Length: 427
Image (tube, rainbow, N blue to C red):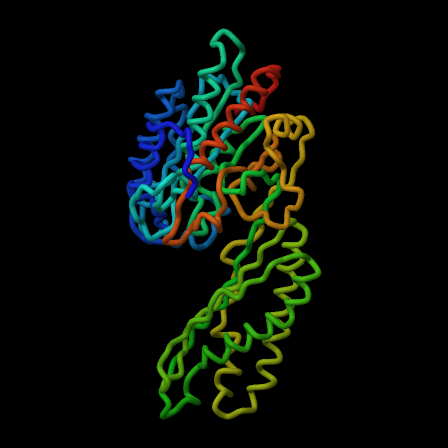
């Protein structure tokens, strides 16, 4: 761990307190967490440096929500959205316009574990992803404000503190709805561990589910059962074989996420499911792969019937394939971020903030909802891999937060000298 840090003690204390609040997404846990308390803690800290709560957003079910979100909202009822609010904080009475908007998600993956101090840093769920960057935003703004004469024109600032990023929610009931309400800026900074440099493009993903709902059997009469294991294993192998070359040509990353039927040796399992995930960098490549998947499944189905229809023990399974197999996209058609802005890129460079020259390491992030709403970037301290995000070793160095805060302050200093009054306006 790094030994030197000028990160303020009051913000270290805030980060420790936030980490010790359970904000594990119900998308994973299936239960309510204490996210509203974390929002209140953050809003109170922001108030001390001049921010007010402009809007507290209790989300609604979005028509573009992934199937997994719809399922969880139905299972948990009104409590789901009631405990998944987001807030918008403003540096002044903005009257509909902002120069710079910061966004960070305060929900986390599971399992929850509280803060533990390390030499030069802190360990705990959300330390790197994404409570640490969120607190460092406040530190940076505080440093800038302390050295900025109050009589000078100040950039109009927003902070979105959101839920609905983790657990496959894809930002549809947090960031997406706030952006659609107009809470964005000329520059939108989506704080996320990015190795210190920023990305101005993102990936997105779509998820395919193959499910079988048939009748099981025992090994006394396996021919009387619908063999979900055979169907899913064959279709997965065929999809992998057919889609592999297509994904390579279109720069789409394919993941066979899992196949589940059962684990007993003497049963024919009639039900089961499998999932594929496809991560794409352009909307066009996503559309091409989705179309190719439809064709590949149709071809694989014909081959399955042809191969197994004449084998006694599998004849029933082959003949009933169309009746018991369901193919559906749990999520698809979501946007990606791809944008450039020479003016803001110059200001970022002047503040010592580097742009990733290669977007190959970019990833999926709520920033996709910033497309076409100002210049949107993904930037923050630490690294998702190096800092153990989503693992039991998650931690952040205070030195990394300190450097990020310094760069935020430098950027705001440059922006304050160039504020023209032209900003993105709330609709």
